[in-house]
Image 1 (spheres, one colour):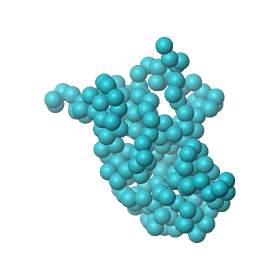
Image 2 (cartoon, rainbow, N blue to C red):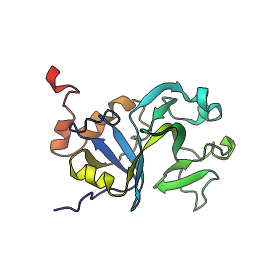
Image 3 (cartoon, one colour):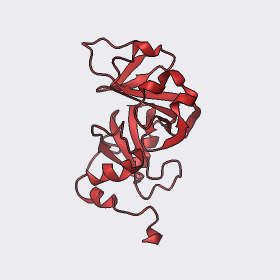
Image 4 (cartoon, one colour):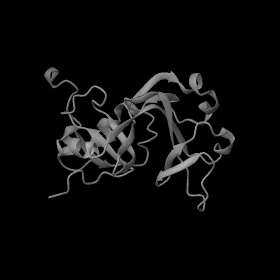
Length: 190
């Protein structure tokens, strides 16, 4: 038997189970950016908005991945922006304005001059708000069956068709999870 909340770490995906009815997270795919004893923080990868980045943060417009819109990162602090990017390992040197969270992925200080990061970013996405959990809250939600905890794959963070990410992530999982991907949004219409 696995430990409660086993597998929760920066870099994994939380995929909402069909039992998770909270409209903030229905069919959400969340990339965990930070997990520690105080809680967890992540961003929803599959909720693009209709707001172009250029309307809100024009300096960053040319650096964001397609689609070049703000994403709804979660229900917390929706009036603030969180930028997530990938930067290769630069021989231990981190570019000014970038803080590595796991692997090549980290957060970008949107107050940093874009010219300091333009040549090293391998992708950038900007989120309005984030998803956050207090100490042991996420573990409890996983244990009660609200979230599947699965590995991330290259391309998840910067998916060009983010709306279909929930289905694609589940479909590539082994066993029963692949079958969950075929569940209609409203089973009553099946």
